Amino acid sequence: MAEGILKKMLKEREINYIQVSSAGTDSWGSCPASLSAREIGKSEEIDLKSHSSRKLTKEMLKEADLILVMSGNHLDHIRKLNEDSMGKSFLLSAFPHRSENESFWIMDPIGGTWDDYRKCFLDLKEIMERIIPELIEIAKKKVQTPPR
Image (cartoon, rainbow, N blue to C red; front, side, top):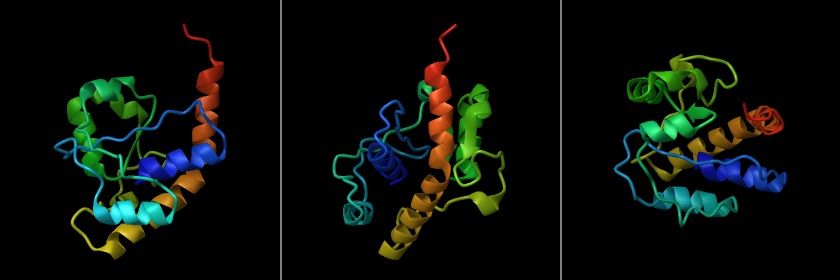
């Protein structure tokens, strides 16, 4: 849902120089978004029908400029996969600050009720609205900085 929300916000702002992608630490890979996530996305004009999960890899971590996660468990998984990626990894709800405090964790609604998914969606949307200016500024600096 976070990927879909952010992609929609970037499209609305006509920002095409930020690539957004998601992966799961516990994903088996190639699973569609849940019915609840698809329904909530559709109600917000976010199409998740073609979304397919994929498992986070060390290569993905190396390629990413910024890694935003929902919980400290995700940070632990990143730490185990590639310690070097911790410098660019943040809890989504704490970004741009560093924290591993559980009060910043976003609970994954997987297996939960429609209301659990709706609450998670609204929380993610609120966070994305707050951080999108920072994300755009970071990306602008990266685009404007010539490669070494």
